[in-house]
Length: 165
Length: 273
Image (tube, rainbow over all chains, first blue to last red):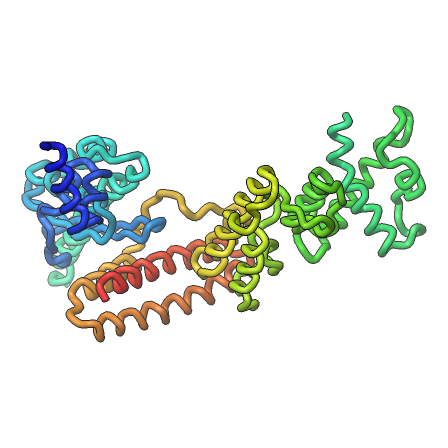
């Protein structure tokens, strides 16, 4: 009787949203959670000096992932956000990545490995590249921020010389 | 040794045929008489090295063929090893050997026959023949499991395999992107590697387009984006055609990547429409 009832519930779910049900069957609950309630979705102004932007893509599936970090003067990541157009695993991976980088030092986040993200989300082997994309996005964001710093340091150095002349 | 001889058979006979057809014996250093008398059963003291040299020359010779030596050799060896119909023992005449021309019996899948050959097409990106579907249906008429139910189990099995392959071939060749990826695969360039790209300009463009699709409120706006994507696809499709023709594989892969992204945008639009 109980199994019949649960069957009915499941059937009801299936008829309402077959895609959702397929996803529940295939993915770990954490993926589903991050997919349905992604953390830190959004954008920072990429031209702000304290913002680093990582933009990466997976050419095989046509996914694109943007991950941004906001860094304070001590090199600590105070905020992070992402925008991903891709599959559930890619969205979940970038969502987890933004959660993990927040509050950490930049050097520290560079050690985040895709395998850790994949393990956390129990990604199947065919979806490992989604977590790889998230790792690459973190690295690209840090790189972008550092490149910006070098550039602004060079221009502030150059500016006084210009006024002197 | 006998195995080696079997492998050499198609090559040497091909060389022989070409030599006989187009070069005069006086200008050729190949000992035609020796080859034609006993090409494969060489005695230990026969002119082995000389024959080998003639094989090498033969290879050079084949490179000037209208199609690549690799494929020529491939289909030749496939023919020589599997040239006979398993049922009636008739020899195959053409490289394409799905159905025995003599007893109409279905043959096992020959992987050396590529998708283009299945449809009798030249191996190039721009498929001029718009009758792909017609040819596809023709093959399915001969191979469809429902239509061969009265045949032997072995033949039904072969028919199922061949039918699946013809379906794959049709789906691959009928769409520009999969056709392009397949062409690269035949050239030994694998596209589906799981790598990350960081081409900022291009990815920013894609991000913007995907945001526009997400924000589009009506079908008119979506259709507008779709027609833009189709324009881009056309451009990169032409770009691929040129690149693959010039064997510029780097550009060809670049075109495939762009096409993948624009196709993906269209998929998303279709989902929303």
